[in-house]
Length: 62
Image (cartoon, rainbow, N blue to C red; front, top):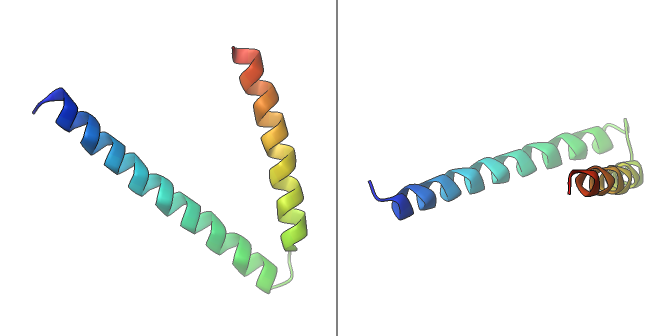
């Protein structure tokens, strides 16, 4: 199998995996919000905080 073909297959597999993870996380948050365990605003605030923390960690690596 050619290297280009292998790379394309890997990218496709990663895309499918990423999409599945996104859908799973989205479904979990929607269910939690429907059951009033957590609000959408709380989720958005947590995402903002995690993005900020992640960017700080990434900057440390570089």
